[in-house]
Length: 64
Image: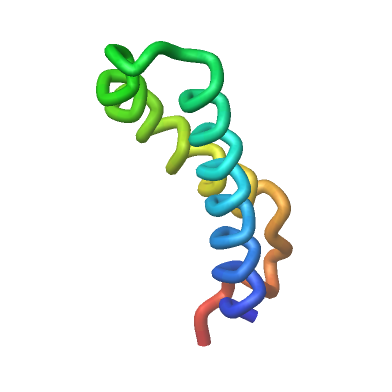
């Protein structure tokens, strides 16, 4: 069951990472790119963590 949780986390992480990368690339100037990546790291990591935990069922989080 932990595999489902890990796969869901990685799927959400990759989709959020791709979305943020496209937004930063197309909507901001090249002078701000490094600063925006540094600022967005907590968001990029936080959204998948919260989403995976909220969607997870009790059986997925129980370790035997």
